[in-house]
Image (cartoon, rainbow, N blue to C red):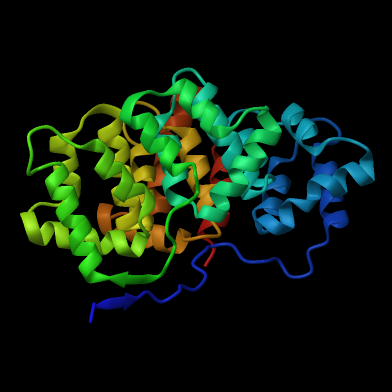
Length: 337
């Protein structure tokens, strides 16, 4: 009989918990007060939002309009600037609306942010991707697939189109004999032939379940003595190489993949603030505790330390340290015990 693994379901690994007794009407009073008069009380805003889960923050938009007849997003944007504005706006969107807006920005901004497209599409569930597609169409008047198709090309376009279908097998069981077959197909499509059959890589990486693919990657390494990422780097190049390697990393160990995304966002000339904000906001109620562990394991420093140092240097260069306290405060709620 075939060898079958059953993967256990995981417990909550986010870093933010429901605030007991949160009241939207009382909360919007705090926000309104923080924005009234001369200057804005940023600390009050982040103190409130940082201690609410997403499902406690999102209703504040409707509660604010009901109470004051004004648009909370518009008021916040008129009072806040820069990264702090981006962070606060991100925190008030549902995960689906936030993902859709980040994908839109990645496509229509100055140059396509390919890494963002792959990050979102390779880490979300089928149900999440289907919802993202609906919201994207409603918000921007065209399908996500059409946007991707008009902005990318070649096998990389096919990879993204496959991922945005939200049609990956999501069975938890793994049949080792089938995993071995897929490992052989990948070997035959790349290392064991002249040229590369990118379509075979695409079909397996985008359609098979994540537990199955982890078994495939293990069998592949046993078979040819090389990790699948190394083979992809030898067989492909450019956006396709980066995209497929990111998909593999995300499937192998999602928290480690996001730890690397955060580390890269803080390296080099200038912090990639958008990536930093997106990952911190989108993973805070999913697997932030695991990301922090993986970060410490990979880089020997806590994520909090690195973000604090990165922000400090960044703010000194950009516009002095005036906003440093606010930004540090903004991030502290991600590190609640």
